[in-house]
Structures are given as structure tokens and as C-alpha cells.
Image (cartoon, rainbow over all chains, first blue to last red; front, side):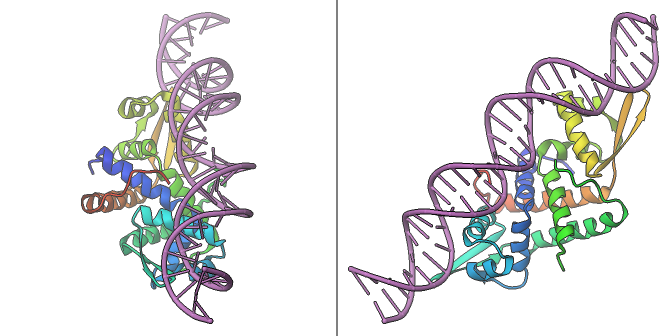
Length: 107
Length: 107
DNA sequence: ATTACATATGCGACATTTAATATATATTAA
DNA sequence: TTAATATATATTAAATGTCGCATATGTAAT
């Protein structure tokens, strides 16, 4: 594959977005249903401002869409393809972790 | 997919590893051939200590293997599957960026 | 209008990441 | 043993990310 700089830079940004447990959890919660902020808060067990903050990031990078109806804002996966890729990664990791878990140290 | 915490945490770590342009460039350079540090340095146009540092991260997370022969250390993709996933992401981004590029602001 | 509710935003403390410089280690050659 | 080459590591500063708290905004009901 030819790796043009702008595309590469963009992909890296998306990887950054995905490199946070809370954001992935939110994405998974949105896998099958749209949901408003309150129910996301209930599900992921985080303070509301944190959820709103992460949602704003997911929105800015177009991983989710949002629509306001009344007092509630409903979020929805923008592109299920992203979640397929996350699934592939989780599958990969699940397989790999059995055989040779690497040290937990951070980057 | 059921998202167990340890798997999720692991996946997030790998996303962190992938969320750096230099590391991705290195991975791509290793796509077809193994290479020693010097040739990687030549190719990605970065100072040698930076390349060594990024290689150490890629190695710690088992994205590459290394073998020392003489004075040289040769690095090699550990699992081409990772690169397939990166390819999928680049494809996704290439498609998406045409239609609706998002603001360049950082997370 | 005022209140209550749902969500977003701003700010600060803290941790992490990047990349530069300098230095250390290991291997080979002379 | 000394010098040269290849690579790795340590240290640091700047940038960025995380998350908690406080507060602002917007909407609806009374």
C-alpha cells in the first residue's frame, strides 16, 4: 500500500481516538442502538462530564453522529466499519494474549 | 462481541502504539523485508536514537521481532496481521477523507 | 420567570508521549 | 588494546492527554 502523508496522519489521529478505554466502551455501547448521554453514563459508569468530553472527541473525529431531540442528545455510530476494525483488533489481542502476553509497562 | 477488560486494555495499548506516524512508517518499511536499524533510519529520515526508541516500543508490544547478527540488529514484522489492520484503517481514512475531512485539531 | 433536568464546556492537576542531546554498550577491525 | 561502527539507553523539556470539579448552556415544565 502506498502511504501518503495526509492519509497516514489522519489514520494516526483515529488510532489516538481509539486508544482510550472509555471511548471504546462508548463505541461498543452504541454498537446496536443509539443512546442518549444519560444512558451512556449509566452504562459506562463514568461521570457525565467525562462522557460528554469523550463523546465530543468521538464526534469531532466523526466516529459518532448526534441528534438533539428535546432535552436529550442521542448519539449513534457514524460508521460501523470502525467497530469492525476494533473487533478485528480485539480478536487479534485475545488470540495473542494467550500465547505471549507482553509486559504491562507503558509506552 | 463481549469486551473483557484485560483484552480491551491490551487493545488500547496497541492502538497507542499505532498512534504515531513514525512507528507506522517503520512498520510499513518492514512490510516486505527485514531491515537493520541503519536502513530504517535512512528510510524514515529520523535520528537514530528516535528510531531505536520507537523500535523498542514496537518490540516490547511484539509488533516486531529482532535478531542480532554481527554489529547489526535486524527487525522484522512479528505479525503481518497487524499490518492488514493498519491497511484497513488507511483504506477507511482514504475513503472518508474525501467526503468529510474533520478539523485538524488535536484530541 | 423560575425551576429542574440534560448536556456541554472551561480549567487545573497530574500523567504520558515525543523527540532531542548526550552517553553507554557491544561488536569488529586494525 | 585501541579505534570505528552500530545500536541502545538515560535525561530532559515541551507538548499532549486524562479526568475531576465547577460552571455554563439549552430545553421543558410549572
